Length: 257
Ligand code: DGL
Image (cartoon, rainbow, N blue to C red):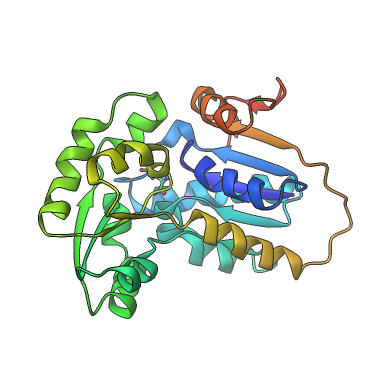
């Protein structure tokens, strides 16, 4: 079984790519909605939550855990790998490299949470891959909540994308897994000449590679089950957009961790 974890429903943008690539696998998704958003929370809190969720997923028999959250990856993946050395973890990070490589204008925008943008991991990535381009960053304050609640994010997106577009950005990195759910709105604001970079398909392919190296005994049945530490409303709404035939009983709210 593939465990998938996010602060809330954003990780479903990774789950849907995993399901597209490996529909035969079983998925157990945990949205930590009781603690969402993670974007401004202290690192220790995110680490505790990531550990609690990982313990739960390991107890349920996960073969691999996908941390489908840039903020949790930046705050906790190194710690998780130390705590659970037998468990393969796949993480997210803003896709600076493909954006920088494809940019013709030499200007790239990055939209992410405050914690992701201040993390050491992100700064290392910038150093490695963005030396030849100008990077314009914006914290997407309020966007996670807009995705969770299904409210209109356009005014916020206008505010965050304008400085990128004015500076000539021709690639915009979605550095938070909630933002792909806003991709249509983002495209409407940027126009077709700007590339929107979402790393989820690459993360799904990497997960398949990790899985193929493991020996597994159980035959999967192609089922997805969703747990939330809060209400499961956003998980139900966004997962049903992808697979309308999901059975009732797939969503479990108020998981105590
Ligand atoms: N989906 C999370 C990410 O990728 C959102 C973080 C949050 O809860 O603020 O960063």
